[in-house]
Each structure stands twice: as C-alpha cells, then as structure tokens.
Length: 286
Image 1 (cartoon, rainbow, N blue to C red):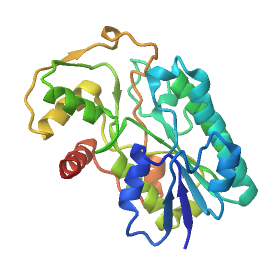
Image 2: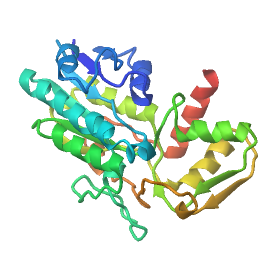
Image 3: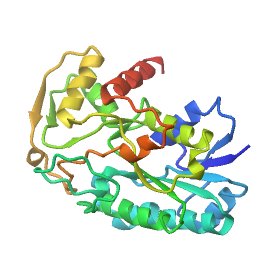
Image 4: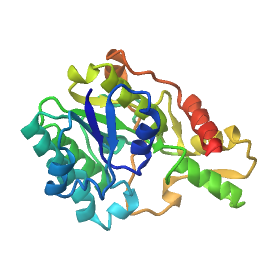
C-alpha cells in the first residue's frame, strides 16, 4: 500500500481528493497547514515522513491580493515547492505538483490551446510565482506538474459560489466577456489525480501535463450556464475587463491543450458543462 500525502487540506482540491479517495486501495493523508506547513522546511520534513507520493495542492491563489503581497505569494508558490522538492529528492518521493493556466500570457488574438512546451509569460504575481514553483518542482527529474484552469468546487470560495450567492441576494450581475478559458471541476481533477496514482501511471509519467475540462467559454458564458443549470432567472450583463479596475492583469485566452494527459490512457475528460452539472448537483446535497 502506498502512502500519499496531500498538502493544502481545507482547500478545494484537497477536499475533493479527500471526498473521492475513500474506495482507493492506497492510503491518502490530507494535511492542513497546521499539520504540514510547506513554508517550513522542518514541517515538510516531518510531514512527509514515510510518504511514497506527495500531491502538493497548497498554494497562494488570491490573484488580486498577490499584487500587494508578493513575498507571501513567493513563500508559498515558490519557496514552499522548493522545500517539498528538496525532501522528495532526498527520500525518493514522487512529487505531483498543481499549477495553473496563469503561467501563460494569452493575448486577445490567440485562439490555439496552449501546449505544455509553449513559452510561458505570466502577466501577474500569482502566475509568476506559480511559474517559479513549477521550476522548483521540475528540479526533481520525475516530478509531475499538472497545470489546470479556473478551478471550482461545491465548497470553498470560487466563481460558482459567488455567482449563486450574488444571484440569491438579488444583485445585478456584470461579468467579463473578453477572457476565455476552461472552467474545471475540482472533483474531476481529483478523480484524475487518484486515477493516475491508483493505476500506477505515476511511475511512468514525468514533466508537465495539462488537465482541464473539455471546451472553453468566457466568464460571462460560464456565469450564464451556472444560472441556467441552477434554475435561476436574474439579470446578467456582459462587460469588458477594462470595466473592472484590477491590480492584476489576467490573460484574455488561457485554454489548455490536453493531448498529452489523454495519451496516458487513465484520465476521463468531460465537458465543462457536464462537470458543472455534477458540482451543482453535489452542492445541493451539502
């Protein structure tokens, strides 16, 4: 039996792994920051004792706040990954690290999904520190970096929850319609991670892989689908990114090409609309 340590307990993805790993043949240990603080080398050394695989879901993900808290974002997204990588190298632990589509710059003219070997060009502190974290992870020869995009779950702070809350409050919704990417269910990504581990595919996988749900949309289109699938009728208006002053610049296009992970043969991809329905159904049971 393998011992898999998952960091970032309480976050969207780690919670999804905890929900879905109950039938797994291996042991999954979901750790909170109090139990395993990736910013502390000593905590990482203790927390990874006896581990065969570590799935690093811990991250500083507040894109806007990162612009004012650069050092905090670096400590988690870069230095924390370095701490994990050092221990993984010393002990022969397999590292699966979660990264983001925000490592890409995606201008308005682009319409071709990004492949793993495309040049990165992060536009904001969050993307830059995640790119630095990728580099730290990849210092381990057989590390796996999974880039994902627009992650959401039935729990935690995310776009789906925000849209549903604001609609329930009767707020008039204005959502940007000039940023295109792919919403990705944390439940689907958790399924993929568990499948990679339980199938043994992790032993032959290394380098960067892209995982997101299938298809693409703008945030406005995503919001419309959230309301439709939830049976909510409310006024929603598209707007431009420039209508929402922001310290953090965001890519206008960040769709990911999933060919490489599909070739592994162990991951099931579904459309973002189908995954959204799963999350909304799941959310109603909470």
